[in-house]
Image (cartoon, rainbow, N blue to C red):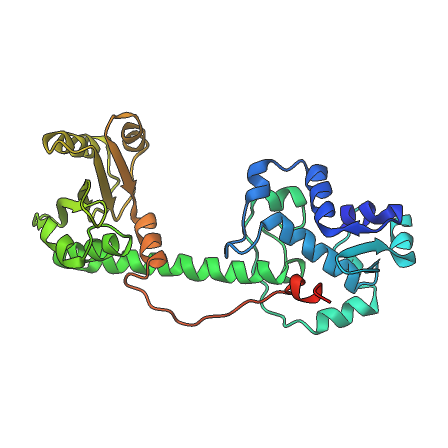
Amino acid sequence: MLPLLRLASDGKEHRFRDAIEALAGHFGLTDAERAEMLPSGTAALFDNRVGWARTYLKQAALLDSPKRGLFRINDRGRKLLAQQPQRIDISVLDQYEEFRQFRSRRKDASTNTLDDAPVSQKLGNVATSASAEQQTPEDLLATAYRRLRSNLELEIIEQIKAASPAFFERLVIDLLVAMGYGGSRQDAGRAIGKSGDGGIDGIIKEDKLGLDVVYIQAKRWEGTVGRPEIQKFAGALQGQRASKGVFLTTSTYSREAVEYAGVISSKIVLIDGEQLASLMIDHNVGVSTMGMYELKRIDNDYFESD
């Protein structure tokens, strides 16, 4: 918020988009950091931060909006800058009655903290010790979402490990079909055979037309999957004259296994337990929707059509 108020200190009218570009340069953000999205994927994280900074400063009556999409500093904003504050945060804005009224209209959602993120660290306004008052509403939603999803992923892995080998076979088939592989579930079911060792091995069509096939191996392991297992899988691919394979496990892979899969000629995708659970959530396999919250924002085109 302080860099944004300083940007407006020239007294000129500023466009929001120009402010985003200027502050990105101020913080020295890389292209990757600029491209970082909110967990919901609805907006760029940095753009969202600048938007809420502008909102907070306007609610504290430190910035005015002379025209739609524009803002400029006012006398109160200049007076605050003249005090040479080291930073502007909630505790600073709380001195203004307008901002306190704005805060009172917001529900006190939680005091959970937001995980560190590269952009957040550079902005300096979110840390692991930050309270809910220092977070935007999107921060609070993202924190709750991440916690719910993380817990769900753990529950999924526990359920998979407790299930039978036959159930694990059906689960993998359902997931691959949901991801667009294998054509129909019946086709996928015929393509994958039982191994009886707690995992499954087989082939599945890469697309609905069957233009290529993918060799699959899945293991319900507790320990780390090492390089020897991936080497055996790569050998199996060569024996099948196949060039593509997917290795799934409920555990993790060793660094040597990951490095080996990355240097061999065959294309082998390694999916660990965390990724398996994540894919199941993304493709609605083994999970159901508990509730939906529709987030809306201003349609600028509507208001600019007059």
